[in-house]
Structure formats: structure tokens, C-alpha cells
Image (cartoon, rainbow, N blue to C red; front, side):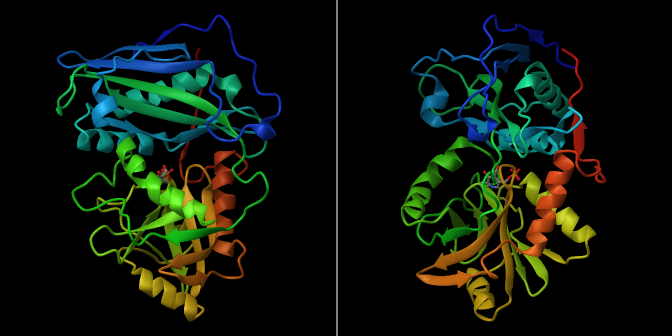
Length: 359
Ligand SMILES: Cc1ncc(COP(=O)(O)O)c(C=O)c1O
């Protein structure tokens, strides 16, 4: 159990008046959680302090060698005013896996959850009220040794910031066009694809920018060895409903194990669908589209929950999915997940964790 010292801001910021204009990740709440790590001492000095900049020496290792990991989750406000989290234990465990791969000291699951609950509790008034809006939570750990040289740092900072964010689908659920990347790769066996480390995202920016320039919402990554099998999308996992069955890449080292992916798989299985986690060749996806068997394609992730795909382009060949509108299974997943998250549906899976008022 962490002993969290709380220092409240003397000058609280004005809360956004128009929650329809929040966007994503643009404004931040009044406070942040911070905890330091020193080799030999462990994690120490857990505290909540006013949100503000860090002073960083130019030779701090994270700035040069990117020893950094992060998480992404949300706090939701229900109609009765309860503030709640969705499967925070999954994020805590994933951060431990990321930490282990990046040689960063792990944070015990209960400490991670306590820290998230504490910062959300202190800034609970920042959890938006508008339909579909939420408080995005960004925990991250970075190396703070000062000096050059590629080694595991002896000092780290764990920080959690919170950003009130608007409804992802403020203008209704819009199916997207996806560019299947055939040149750049995101991950390969033995690398860091299964982690949420900043470096993965830095390496993905170029392909994302090029796809965007051509009018595509995101890139679909293929496996890094043969560029043959579908893996995931820029910031989402991806599922394909072909001839009644749902296919998605297995999380075997090169794909981020998404909390939404895992939850959708559980729900789909509960509803009697066969879900196949394994290798799916992009050529077979295109063939299924030609044969009229590619029924639904959707991304899964915390930000959007599900994001229906209406078109894929691979090596100049286009696949059009369904009638270009969200499919029934995608819609059912969206309704069920968001229903539980915002407390409109009962939590039949034990996924919801309320944030009690303590501070
Ligand atoms: C690369 C990548 N894949 C998948 C996901 C989806 O993960 P989750 O459902 O836990 O948000 C994300 C989002 O965090 C991501 O960045």
C-alpha cells in the first residue's frame, strides 16, 4: 500500500465549459501522480502534486535512448455520478510486461491501481459529464539517470496525468479507410511490439503520416518477417469477420495485447461466435472480400472502443467491406462495452472498478 502525500493546487484551472469541444489529449487536469525509483531503494515518494513541467537535465537518458513505457485507460462518469474504471488490472499487468522488456523496474499491480484511483479521485471533478466523454488517463515511466551511455537507468519516474477528452464519435460512428502497409514494419519477433514503449510509436509515425496524406485513417501493419499476415492497426487491434467467424492476430510478441481486444473476444465467445486467434494472410482477407465473405472489419482500442473499417487498400488493390456502414456485430460490441463502461448496462463480467471518494 502506497503512502501517497497530497499537495493540492492553490490555483485550480477553470474546467472546460463546452465539453463538445474537448477533443483528445489537449487539456489536462489540476494534478498529477508522481513516484520515483532509485536503485537499491525501490519506488518511493508517492505523491499527488499540482500538474506542471518536470525539470530535466539535457543528458537524461530517456531523451537519448528512449527507455520509456506508458499506458492508456479511461475513467467514466455514470448517470448516478459514480466514477469508474474499466479493467485497470489489465493495464497494470501490461505495464509490468512492458517494464520487464525495457529493463524498467515493475510497479506492483495494487500500487498501480491505487495510484490511478488516487489521481482520479483527487481530480474527479475533471471527469466529463457529456455523453461519451471521459477522463483519459496516461500513466508513464521514464528513465532519469543523467549521463550518456546505453545502460539500464538506476533512476526512474512514474507519473500519471489525466486529460478530459470528448466523445470519440461526436458525429456518429464513421467507418474508416485503412492503408495496408507493405514497406515499413512496426514489429518483429524478439523486438518490442507487445509493449507500450514510446519507441514503437516513434517508429510508426512515418507510415502513419504517409497514409494520412493519401486519405487513410490509419495503417494496418503486416508481420515484420514476411509482410504477409495481418497484425494490428496504428493504435488498435483489428478483427475480421469472415463467413461467420472472427479472426484476429494472436498476441505472441509482435502485437500489443489490447484490453479492448481481450474484452471483445470474451464477449464474442459468450455470444457463441468462433474466434480464431492466429495467422491471417492479407491475401486471404482480400480474397474473402472478392467472394463477398468479408462481413465486418473493426479495430478495437480504448479510445474508440470499436472502429468499423469500410475499405482496405493493399498494393493498390481495394477491398470494400459490407455496405460501408457499421456491421451488426461491431455495433453490438460497441453498445455492450460502452454500456458497461458508462454504467448503462450491468457489469456482468466483473470488469468495472469504482473509484471511491477517499481524498
Ligand atoms: C499499437 C496499439 N495496439 C492496440 C491498442 C489497443 O489497446 P487497448 O485496447 O488496451 O487500448 C493500442 C492502444 O493502446 C495501441 O496503441
